[in-house]
Amino acid sequence: MNRSSQLFHDSQRVIPGGVNSPVRAFKAVVGDPVFVQSAEGHTLIDADGNRYIDLIGSWGPMIVGHAHPEVVAVIQEAATRGTSYGAPTEAELLFAQDIVDAVPSVEQVRLCSSGTEATMHALRLARGFTGRDAILKLDGCYHGAHDSVLVAAGSGVATFAQPGSPGIIAPATLTAPYNDLAAVERHLQATPVAAILVEPVAGNMGCIPPQPGYLEGLRALCDRYGALLIFDEVMTGFRLAYGGAQERFGVRPDLTCLGKIVGGGLPLAAFGGRREIMQRLSPVGPVYQAGTLSGNPLAVAAGRKTLELLRAPGFYERLEALSAGLEARLSPIVAKAGLSMHRVGSMITIYFSPVAPWRFDEVARCDLPRFGRFHRACLDRGIYLPCSQYEAAFLPATLTDHDLDTLAAGIAEAIDASVSP
Ligand SMILES: *Cc1c(COP(=O)(O)O)cnc(C)c1O
Image (tube, rainbow, N blue to C red):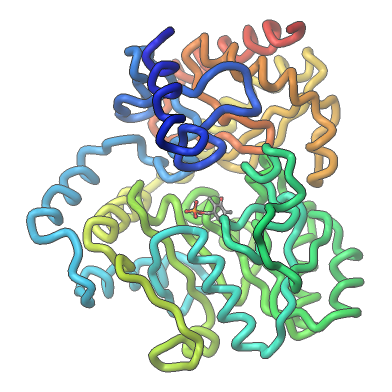
């Protein structure tokens, strides 16, 4: 038994399933999970010393690469001044200013510690602001692990084939298929809805783009029926553009949730939006929201430095060019194998289906056992891809043309190797 498998075996004695977040257990693919020893740039080194090109990047945050020297330096420097105060700091002011400057619809922002918290607080705020109870989410979108959004959710919830999760209370959560405006309007006609919560580009059922007019249509429906539009940009924020999907697609939500990249790889997330709505939050307004570690100085330092790196001239143009370069290399390989693909910016998914899906039930019809074999074949070739058909890959800006060639060659072999069990 290799060391990763030994560690996984031992972990299961003291940690449920051996992992601290379900998808890490590799249940939807062949073989045991890889236990990580260290990472640098886009190279991940496992407990057995194997090296991988990492196309997960901690599920999105590591867009500038792991252990970026400038990010590490600011974390070290911050740690020497204390790791948590539970009191406001100037760095939080500067960071909030950076976020407000970056994200088109955000006039005020509040920091928290995870994407789960960000969507939970944004939904509570939307309910408090509108005085309505119901929320509407889209099938296959994932918004974290709290009650009202664990309904028809993507990511690990979909991977483990549960309709939702036992133990949740979500009576006021309506759902509609992604990319289907008519289904949304039927709900809005029947029920007063506080907010529509959506991943503007879905990344938790694989990468699924919004069809032309979809985001604009959601905006118009929200305006017509008095609901708030909440973009969950935990995945897309600072990835699809510096200002996120809302910059890329030119649609302004009322509230925005951020996470992953904004924390530079440390536990930090945020939600923000129109001043009039944000002013309903405690202590100025009645909607309560709080967190002992919110605005943690290490996380704020990592986030600020990461955003500074992303503001370097040409950063997103280069990321787009290398992402397009990978797509161009993969397109003929995928087409020849009778498979399909979606890419938006640096989010990309190969689907084990001849036609690329536009909604969750279409992803569920992919050849999932073959995906599981493909995933292991990629690992064997030093390529670390998301361990579920329901997860998008995230390209880091550190990839070179040589890496793209290596990836395309390895993925082509792995597709061939996955044909038969
Ligand atoms: C990852 C993710 C979340 C949850 O964030 P956590 O930090 O894991 O709680 C919420 N929404 C989206 C779109 C995500 O991708």
